Length: 174
Image (cartoon, rainbow, N blue to C red; front, side, top):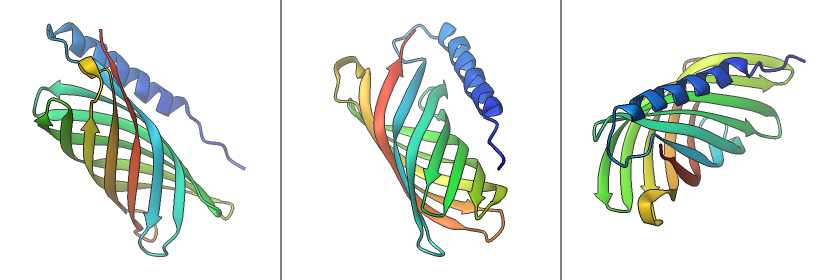
């Protein structure tokens, strides 16, 4: 059985965090350097109706205020017949709805590593999401998110799936 080497994924998150530190040095306002997303995920395959569930971990930062947010995330999904690791990079356009609510539309590439029936498949996919962020706490330090999405795989079978992630937002300030 092959194991997934997590070193490249860890390196990606370290690089994203270091980039956030550089971007924060240029800003003088009280915007967070990064936002951590920690939550759960559910995914439904539109071809065969199979479902899988797992965790969701992501880091988000803003390179262009009010125009572009980048989110890098990883989602391990488990079902009764397979294990899947989704790693994505989303480019999001944010809209502020109120002092406590934001809406974002995002698209981006995704790498899908699947272990099923003793075989391993790696493929690329495209993903589109709506991201609802709610900040009930003072100072926008903690909040929660709901992110429904659609995924189309360019790998074998050209799988299509709908999914949703939801969880806790943690703002990281300098």
